[in-house]
Length: 166
Image 1: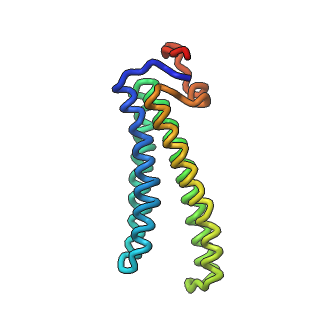
Image 2: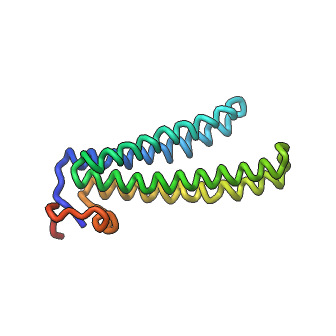
């Protein structure tokens, strides 16, 4: 559903999606692959989860604040980003758990078959990153045009919001 919102609200509503996309595309795709492929800088890959935790914490913190202080349309978009951030945190936790189990099974000395098992833990996270990039891009488009998903309207109804027909 499309709502009448100000340019300022549109700008504010795009903000959480921009940060989430920065985390997914710049951090988890470009930075991770770049550091992993640079043979002399592979150990710097640990900065990827650090940056990710900072950005995801920021999104969750701002979503909690927006629930109380932001205009309804902006609040709703922060909640969408927060929900997806929680999903992503869960996937990262699952990936870390699988890698830890593989590390423990290998006794700290992984062989090629252990790397294959670890890859099975990483694959769902990679797919999640790609799906979230598409979803967040769509949410940014929705914010730009005054749109909200139906589920968020049902969760945070606002009878005073001005609906635009057509």
